[in-house]
Length: 222
Image (tube, rainbow, N blue to C red):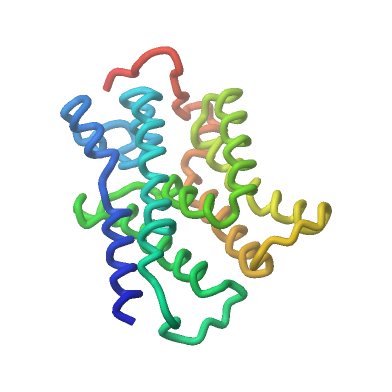
């Protein structure tokens, strides 16, 4: 049991690394939470400091999730401390637990007064190791929507919605067996709806035409 506890704690600390704060401090000497939307995430860094630094933060946040599920989760060995009633093997379940702890760390970071980001990039880093094909499709959807609309929020929402849709198509139309499909699909649907909920203000701004668009050509001044 102590190993699982250690994995949860280490995964939380990995997710809690305040990448957006560190990058914004190093680049411009600012606390990104005092600029733009006030969110400590890659999207806000993208708006305030430009797409290069925003993309860097998004990648680093995703790598925090990968670190938790690929490396930290491997500290587990031996028998699981309680009965595993899920359709996943023990290690995959440990990965899910470690990944969830990393997302919690990102959203409520102990290193940033418990004021972190929305956890989307970290969540993508986790899911890419579990439902790789579906996440890659979602990444493609995100990039296409972003390039066409220049709305990061719209790209994030459509990408999130594409994940359960891709899973349904692969499992039922192409008859590709997805491990834990009946458990993962409801989870991904709930996650997609959660993404829509956390972006409800962005939806209103997109409809009103007041949502900020990213600039691919030059750095945006804070």
